Length: 191
Ligand code: GLN
Image (cartoon, rainbow, N blue to C red; front, side):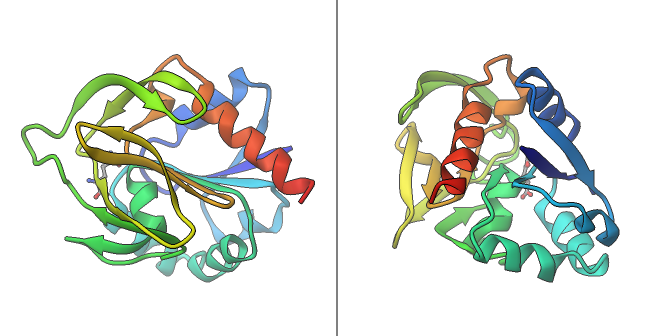
């Protein structure tokens, strides 16, 4: 199994380190040619969604990735990556728009934007959650399903082969969310 990590901007290195710990092969997508390699899953990291969206389009990567996601490529978006997947974005612009969620950008405000908590994620129990100027999911509809709620706000969701978290699981020691994604990829191969 090989996972591609979008590495134009943001917290992509930490995802690679997580996958190293799980013994999963990975490589970075920085330019269009990198998409010539085959991969079984895609990680969209945290960072700045507006910058990532701009670079995806400028580097001619946007259309190819959107088609792959629509065709069922397993994808995991964290924080800004969640915003890239969202069908609707409040205070921002839709990017791939493949997931039936409404993302509210910078939802916790500038001062309260970064915090750590531990809370339940469906199927995983209590896990560490680090939020950095995070969005939250203000609405989940269609085939999307809520996986975690913190302080009454949805912070993780799944829709078929798409997984999104408002927090950054790659910044904590706990590997369970990445393991969950690896399992999603395995299951997608037997579908
Ligand atoms: N506020 C950022 C955005 O809108 C997301 C922050 C993050 O990824 N840590 O893209």
